[in-house]
Image (cartoon, rainbow, N blue to C red; front, side):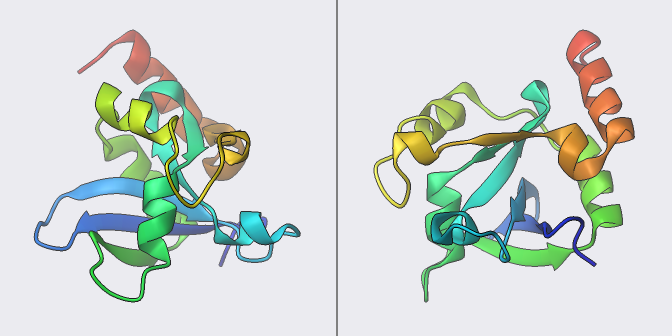
Length: 131
């Protein structure tokens, strides 16, 4: 069951087996652009950030980069704490959209709002004490 209209996705490379992204969508959002957007977890910032290249992949008809597996919030919480930090290159790419979203549409949501305080605290502790 989606939490407050959010659906969660585990994204794995089509030719791989490791999880690249934990993503969230809002299919029931008011604005059409928000219905299409995909936000991805940035663990080292404890935030979900609108991700134009994952959004683009999510809505492709073929030639997907990732397998998009719909998961429940319990599994999303588990995946979140296991996600590696996002590379500086990927973060820079996300903040410089070339398709799908404009710069103004690159918004963010705190992890606490989507996954709860426990997950937010775990990610925060991880920033302070990297493993």
